[in-house]
Image (cartoon, rainbow over all chains, first blue to last red):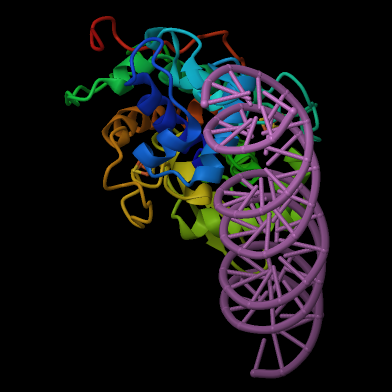
Length: 151
Length: 151
DNA sequence: TCCAATCGGACGGATTTGGTCCGATTGGCA
DNA sequence: TGCCAATCGGACCAAATCCGTCCGATTGGA
Ligand code: SF4
Ligand code: SF4
């Protein structure tokens, strides 16, 4: 239950890029210096984020990267899925690749779908704009199940 | 963002064990046959679950395993943490092992704590008794953030 | 026309994970 | 009371994935 460090670094870099403001260009080298991520790793992340459509990259001298959308329309789920692939707790929840031998007789499979939606909701509820906002209010997101739904 | 297959299998086995009822003994071989998990893997899971205190194991002929607590007091989080270790999305959230070089200047670290609590809540809200209940009501657990908390 | 800067993808080493095996221990039975 | 069979417990090894690094392709400017 730990997301890859690549995805973690991607979030850090996207947060740094969001601080540049709308349309503010940056590049992999600059972001690496600001965040502390190793430069080669930062380059790789830029590639993946660009191919996922989260940032727009421009080649050549004076090029760089730029957020493809506004910061408040990019969620944590978008970033994580761009790097780590789809958020699927188990193999059966993932749409593709039905390669679980137990899938036929497994009786807990339907329940995983519920949990998977819950964690995805937790990731989708946080936008990049919230992350970029520096004053960390000690707000606690209450995502516990409503009393009674599980009766 | 995918939990290990060991943890997945552990949940399946625990669910099968819970169906035996309170005090109903079983063993690794029987559970492997019921669930389809390879027998050696099932044995390993029994070891981990026993050392975590979720099941009580008895050696010798006619021995076996038994749920240590009632099914409604064991949550998904307990099972997953017993096999996969603590639920910590990032290295800095984990209590031990502060081995992230960016930890000093990282500005998104506090936010991860919030998300981590959210996913842990999603796992803690599902009990083993719920999983063992077979009729899968198409209930949807609403764990989206309360409107307004993120203003 | 040449050059410098930047993204893009391919390669290799390393850590973790999953699977398998055999030994230690205990209760039952003759 | 001694032996045996059944079961858990932990150690070992192969495979896969992941991380980090390097070099080539592409573009704009001087
Ligand atoms: S079918 Fe069952 S064992 Fe297979 S991935 Fe889904 S929950 Fe896990
Ligand atoms: S300190 Fe920042 S980079 Fe390091 S693990 Fe925490 S969130 Fe990730």
